[in-house]
Image 1 (cartoon, rainbow, N blue to C red):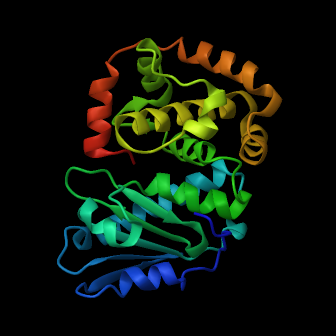
Image 2 (image 1 turned 90 degrees about the horizontal axis):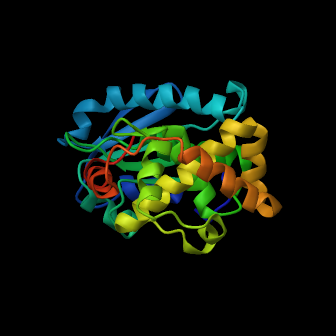
Amino acid sequence: RRAGPSPDGHRAPFVKRVLGAPGTEWVRHAAPGMHVHAPAGSRAADVLPSLAAQAGAARVELRRLLAMEAAEDTAHLELLAVDAREQMRPFTGGTPGGWAEPAASAVLFVTNDSARAPLRHELTHVLSWQRWGTPRSQWISEGLAMHAVGRCGGRALHAMAASLAAEGRLAPLADLPRRFHVEGESGAAMYVQAGSVVRHVAETGGVPALRALWSRGLGADLAAVDRAWRARVGQERVAERWERIAEDVRARGCE
């Protein structure tokens, strides 16, 4: 996500490359403000109207989160759904559950009977980059997307972070800019921690605090935020071991 975001990028090379991939015929469903695509004959192709409805509802909620007027949200979204993670590889170089291209107003994602479509998460990346520009750090961008989702498999972010805290798995906030990664179980832990921190910032300071975090990071407030956030997480009851949570997140993802 290095390119500067643009609200009119639906004709961008990324979208053309996906839809023009040899050996795949795509079908399209048109909805207000978006097109939803899937390979013909795929499971995803059978649920395109439902995916469009999910994306539309998420978009309305994300405008509120970002303090964004409807008139300011001019992006025409291109949502590209596939059935399996391996189908992501030709376009992303790996097998993530979702991928956002803010400059193209596009999201490529996996959805099937066992995996939650990560529409809210990826749309957060698109709209936040278009609304607020490039974030100070990757962990803040991913943390905001996790905050927007709010829960994962019915588990609240702070509750999942409490399981990490109970097992000594939380990283110092000062380390997040250089240690943040997205791979494997430790990457899932990083996502959860980032989401919990961003949610705490939103709970205590609202949208102005989120925007300051986005553009400046934690800065001089880092130590105080770290203490207050850990105290907030410490109020949660630890109901599950992290290993069990991570297994479900890896298998089914979050919204």
